[in-house]
Length: 390
View 1 (spheres, one colour):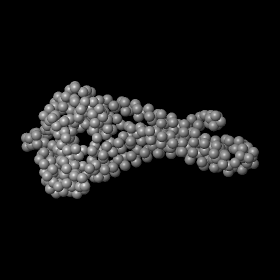
View 2 (cartoon, one colour):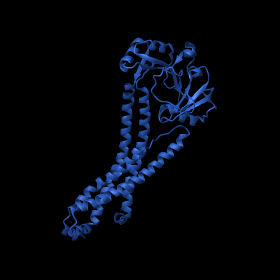
View 3 (tube, helix red, strand yellow):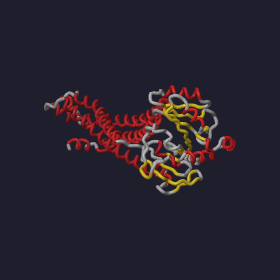
């Protein structure tokens, strides 16, 4: 209570100081939550590519969002190489060609024959409602939706949806994964080939039959096979293809994400530094106003350590209050923004418990550190001179 009384003696100055900390913590919470979401997406992609080699067309012929068509016999050529446990031909394409894109992972259609991985897939995907695709679904128009895309498309088990002009029956909705599958519609390979063919320019469509079309091959190495060596072997043995390993994915995406995270956190840290400077200013003014009080405490035997401790605790309390308010405001922004974008599948933020604890702890420590210099100056005051201070 005494601490609160000390702060309330300077209501306006204390309020402005807390406001400075609040703004900094608000920025830290919001930007860190955005960084958490990006990192979750990248981590999901990294997990998916671990232990795989992605084979795509190396030509400059591309349609849609940079997708190059390939012939399905590429999968047969890859499958015949040493060190290949399974080679799965896939079609991946943008879900809505008229979409302007959104933050994070784009909505996609993925087509493959269920079970073609021969049990080598380690990325765990489960159905929240309904079921996953089976090999018997080939030739039919059925779809399994990721959680975010299902909500965006208004998909319900047993209902129908229209995807690029074709009507599909919804047979499953996936559990949330917080990464790419949440924004994916999984269909049988034959259905994806039909959709892919319709998206191609007429010359390409006439040159390649629908049942021959794919956009990539996912290769599962046999146990003990080096991914990089297998990728080099594929490029040397199969004409006009390029490969991507898990390590290459991490290298390409990781550096970009690291720069983005540095920018995000840098903006928040600058805001916090401004808040810290305001704490130093407030505590310095407090020491000046309480010089006689400090002199009396020193004259009746108060130690320098006690003086420092009292002022540092006061500064820490200012940081703590600012941190709590900033966390509350930041959490409010995160929740409102996510709810506003949830219907369209645009979830921008991921506020974790670790981020919340760090924000409050950081603001408290910032207040303590900012209060050390004024507290140290106060403790060094000569008691006699302090008593005579006007």
